[in-house]
Image 1 (cartoon, rainbow, N blue to C red):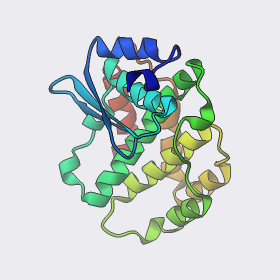
Image 2: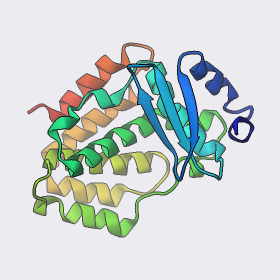
Image 3: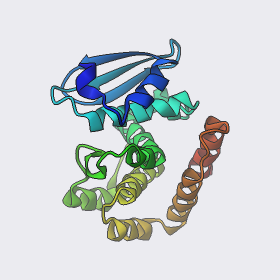
Image 4: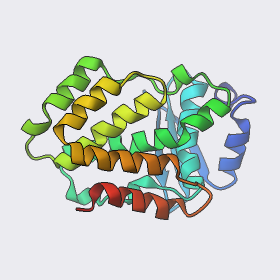
Length: 208
């Protein structure tokens, strides 16, 4: 399986990560990283296509942990209902995409193969329009997750300006706060206490 997932583009990244983490590769129906900080181990799920691009995508999620950034530690997921939990994971996933997309390109992978699919425009419109009608969901969390979905997709080449302007009309003040956090994410230095930097960024978003 390793020969199908590795080539000269990602072998250096792989060797760096296995020097620190116990990594298992499991064949299933999709691609996903499951990181276990208590045992310094990781499960990387792949499908039968053995996509080097999507496998490298998961390695880059793991590389953030190599640098000391584990974004999921920011939220107390026990306080979320099942919908909020999914929204929070989506938010963190998209922030991580922004952090390592450039590295994916530096490794000479095709940017169009960075993710399996992008958001459908009709679904994006629906998500924006239903914002004020939601019940039993933290609206700030929902808004932030939607903002970073749009910004991540914009970052890797999709046209998302019109959707962002629609989102801005819903809450201009909070949109500006998201913009400030986004700029800070672009400036985040993975070599200098990234978890500390990330916590400060998230406080911009979630501190009243």
